[in-house]
Image (cartoon, rainbow, N blue to C red; front, side, top):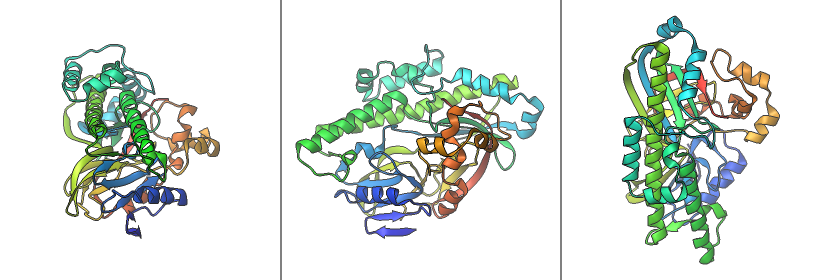
Length: 389
């Protein structure tokens, strides 16, 4: 751990100057308590650094939570092994079955609502506070449930160190969460502008407790976080259905882990009740299970928190970018992407060039930096990768 200042601690051995400066700006906000913690995967984000843990008293910065409210991971171990996979074969067909069941890419959603479980999840969301906000800003939110998105969101079939099959996916609150977050970021910026508050970055605009706008944000935030959780559950059901169709038999679920990594929760740290915003970080309280995915084509990890108080009971959420999407497309080639994905079933396309593993920090280094934050329970290697354009 590197104590950069009294208000900023870092667990990142790879930290470029721009990311450090951005974190320092966020850490300078007067309501940060006790300090901002940078995780090993820290990199530049919108307003606040991705891979940062931000405890605040009496205020929240909506952009510091992020626009993909509730983004996170879901993993399920099923009763299949590498031997079953080899015997069945046809991983290309499995990928296609998954792609047909789960809408992929930005702006692509379900055409209709089918299935009792889907309807039950929608009813649950309709009955939550915040549903009216979602309805007003994205009337099609019901059709978004069970859809993946694009960028670094994915669905994977992987094998662990014992050659057992895991289903692994990464997604968030989709378009409805993005629109809700954007609305509240704008409101926070207007509030600060009206009060002539000088900010080190306009995306660090904040809402204060006691302001009705703060309560509105917390309500919509919690709704979007729950939407994201149910979105991952819905997708996982469909992925399992695809696996059963491919295997031509029912496949039992043996173990499940689910976690947010873009969210805010009420927690206590160093004697104070704070709003803890994890922007690209997971809960790593002692004994809490979590998921840390690598980049496309690399290893991912099932972990359990070590309960590191100094790290604000948090750990990284993934590898963390080293190259922007534009820079990655200029720097790397399709041949390099093909080589990185050798032995993995994936949809071969130039659309994923900016997701090449070399565009990210080495996940092995991130996990070494995390040795006092989490314990590794399982190491997963991909055999099927599904992504949206």
